[in-house]
Amino acid sequence: MSVRPATEPRTLAPPERRVAEIAANEPVGAYSLLTAVDATGPPDPAPGQFYMLSTVERWGGEDGRPYLPRAFSFARARPAPGGGAELDFLLEEIGPGTRRLGELRVGEGLRLVGPLGQGFRQASGRRLLVGGGIGAAPLLCLSDVLGADTRVLLGFRSAAHAEAAGLFAGEPALATDDGSAGRAGLVTDLLGEQLEEESSAAVFACGPPAMLEAVRALCANLGVPAQLALESGMACGFGACMGCVVQTREGYVRVCVDGPVIDADRLAPQVA
Ligand SMILES: Cc1cc2nc3c(=O)[nH]c(=O)nc-3n(C[C@H](O)[C@H](O)[C@H](O)COP(=O)(O)OP(=O)(O)OC[C@H]3O[C@@H](n4cnc5c(N)ncnc54)[C@H](O)[C@@H]3O)c2cc1C
Ligand code: FES
Image (cartoon, rainbow, N blue to C red; front, side):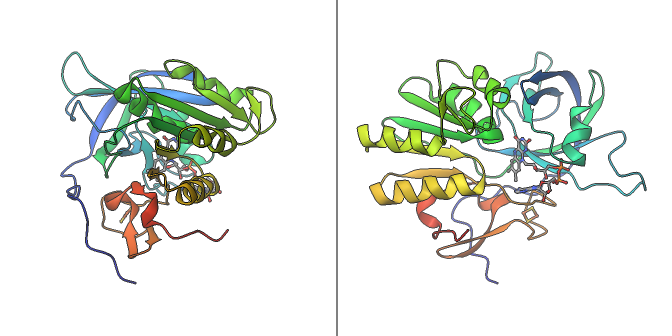
């Protein structure tokens, strides 16, 4: 396996794990919005970057073996009044790590390392943001930064998941698998229609692998530039374990340091 040399400046291995304090944990439909004060961390992570999270207390199974930290995109970041950043994370409880993070209460400790990775890059002209499920999380801070001339298209499983669309400013276009909110269908249906109207747009997408492959194929056919925020199983988050590699046209890259945001034209078609 060959790892292609970095095409962009690398995130340096972080010198420390910090402990942030939980300031809020609120349900947003089927998801939870966790807010933590990272008092000594940088106030301005870039949209698309991520943090490796774990809890100070009870991070591990019944047998006491610790879990690895888990990767999470920050959804929003604000300078904290006393310094550092107030960070929002949108969580979907799917396993032991997200369940434990979802239990956190105000005042408890959140261990974090970050911000890590390469986020979204600037693009001129009309921007289309495309999110599937929990992939909406990094698009929240991106849409805040891009502001006007940005259209947000979101797809969710059901109306309960689609409540996360309410966190966005403006009115995102919405599709759900079961038709319980917005249009019945896939977010890529919305994207296809939008690109028929404005094929000069730039696309920024985050979501499950099948959705990202559909976005990649659609954009490749129309010659539309796209940046995709990939997910991959991550053990370290900063380049040490090789657990997160994905294949590109030029060889394998580590999603945690060369991504998670990667230009779609670097990726070969994915076989399901
Ligand atoms: C860069 C990055 C950003 C992320 N941002 C967020 C976020 O903002 N919010 C959020 O809720 N999650 C996010 N994730 C996903 C989250 O890190 C994983 O789902 C994590 O493994 C959940 O931990 P767990 O212990 O709850 O579940 P696990 O025990 O790790 O997994 C539970 C189930 O999900 C499957 N699974 C785990 N990870 C993946 C994956 N990457 N792709 C497909 N199936 C998987 C497992 O096989 C298992 O069946 C992000 C991941 C990455 C790499
Ligand atoms: S998560 Fe360890 S190298 Fe990427």
